[in-house]
Structures are given as C-alpha cells and as structure tokens.
Image (cartoon, rainbow, N blue to C red; front, side, top):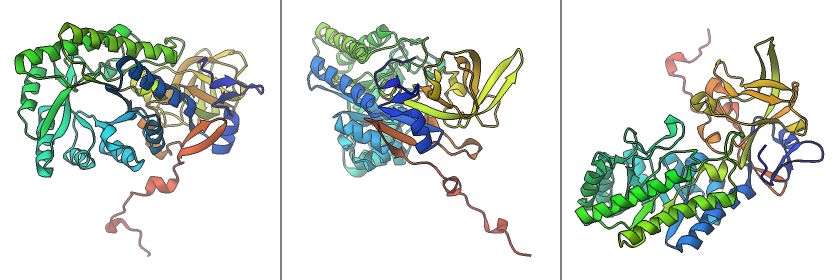
Length: 445
C-alpha cells in the first residue's frame, strides 16, 4: 500500500485521507466518490516550483498539465502555488479563465486546435500556443492578423526517444499524431516555415516523450536531443532558442509493480533535466533558454482515490469471484483502454489481511467493465466500502455518462475537512440537452 503520510489506517481500522475517515466520507457524500488530498497536491506543485527556482533561477515556469484533472478549484490551487497551467481544449481554457487564472501563464496544446479555440486563446491573451502542424501555424498567423497581434508559439517536435510505456501513451516517436519529427527533417522545415510568418513569434520547442515513465535517462536523452536540434537550427537557419518546454510524463505509483517515488525523487528527475540543458548550453555556447516543464499525473495522481460501495458478489467455482461496485468504466475507463492496474483496499476493513483473490467489476452493461483483476482482499460483503488508490489523474477527466450513469462528484480534503469541488450530477443534468422534435411530441388521444 502507498505509504504517503496523508493516506493511512486510523484506530477504527478505516482508511483515512487528508485526516478524513473514508467511511465517513462515503456516508456524507455517497458513492462513487472522487476524493482529493489538497496537501499532497500543493506539496507536489511546490516541489517542482522550488526545485526549478533553486536549480535554474527565475528563468523558467512549471505548468500543471491540467488534462490530468481539470476543474476551477485545481486552477485556483495552481495560481496560489505560483505555477502556470497548460490546457488542451477550449473547455479547459474556459475553466481556467473562469477560475481567474492569469492568462499569461497559460499554454495551449492539442494536435488539432479548432479555429474558434485558437481565437479564444488569442482573445484571452494567453502566454503561448504549442503548434502541432503546419495548418496550426497558419491558423494562429491568420487569427493573429485579424486581431493585429503577434502570438508567441512553440513547435512540438519529436526527438525519436522511445519511452518504455504503453504504446497508446508514447507520443514522441516518428510515427505519432503529435508534432514534427526531427529524424525526417519535418521539424527543420516547420521551423523555417514558422519563422516566415508575420503574426507568429517562434520562441522555441516543446517535447513530450510519453506518460507514466520511470526511466530518468529517457527524459535526459530527449532534452539533449532537443538541445542538439536547437543548435543545428541556429547554425542552419539563424534561429535562437528562447524557450524550451520539456513536457512531463513522470510515472506514479499505482501498484507495487511500480516504483514508489518520493517528492524528493521527482525533484531529482527535474534536476537531471536541468543539468543536461545546462551542459548542452555550455557545449554549444548558447544562452540558457526559458525552461518549462509540465507535470500533471505526478501532481494529482496519488493525491486522489475513488470510493465505491460493494454490491453484488458473484462466485464462479474454480474460475473467479467478482465484486461488483456502484461505479465502473464510466468513472474510470483506464482499465478498458490500457489494462491499467490499480490497488484496491476495503476502506472500512483496511487493517485486515487479504484472504481471497477477486476481480472488481463495474455496473455497466459491458463485459469489459472491469476496474481491477485478480487482486487480493479480505472476504468482502455487500455494503463494504472499497477504495481504489491513485485515481487522481485521468479518471474524472475521462469520465462519461455511459448507460446514462451519473459522473461522480469530486471532493477536496484538507485537515480532515471535506468540500465539493465538483458537485454531483443529477438525472436532470443527464437530460438537460435532450430535445424532442415537434413531430415526436406525445399528443393526447
């Protein structure tokens, strides 16, 4: 079990997060329920912020990669912790702005930003847009010309570094929907193309090699390759690198198959990146670029858990035992997508030893609606509270209303006090946008 200090077993044998008893949380807020530990989120934001300042001065910015978990409260926390954010859609941008987040500290990503999203970003005067295609460079230039402004951009480039992670979350190989490849010359041509635009100011490059990566050397190699490329562009095109964004992707603990990284360990990842950037800058007699990193999962992933109530229990002799819970793939589709592994625990009997191997099934009408497979738990009963750990990233953000299930609410816990940061959905919410054409209206006989 994850041993961070704010997740522990209390005297009642109940799982506790942020000083709050999860069994009491389930009673007060019902289940399924996303629970976030505010202290852990702030700790991770401050670790990255303080490490960057210590090792690189004020010449950089930490961005919270908000696709991991986006709501107004998380943007308020990021603002208070003096970091920036990146967004990947008009919806995330709108949410950040509604929270009062400073636009100049917002970067926008996405491999196919729509015209109106780019327009919204320019109107908000966000800090930077990361261009992912020639057409996006054109769109930004065109929308900038309409408004009489010059927009700062980065080019997303692929250094060809293979990250040892699931194929669907590798993003920096040549065969990727993201960015311009260094290997095939596309990144060089895109650099020259962007430099010619009147309403675009190319500041530098962005690189993100994938997600859930534990190999520190993968990040270091990628940083070195991008610096090599930047120097080559200076020699060939006269381009001066002003900003270097090295993305995120640091792995987190989901099960004991994963390495458990302490906050200090994440600081070491960043220190290694910084050392490589400095080494390359010295080698090439280049000025140090403004350095940006984008941690997301490592900030909120382990800060979040999901609480469920055990319902039906199906024992198939000599085959498998299924524990069905009141949630499922509609609140956590990651097993269905990636076969992602999680650690479940009976929150109301957290100090009991496991005695049987079970699989956790959801309530959706899909045989693939599974949350965990072949995990060891105490013999469960209907009504037990089940917690699945490390669900703070890519759970709420990927949730859906499949089978017209309600997306669970989110609460933030600090010093034992819990408050909504996303309210519960209602059945009225599910039908709010439904329309019945006049010809289908029910008429009296």
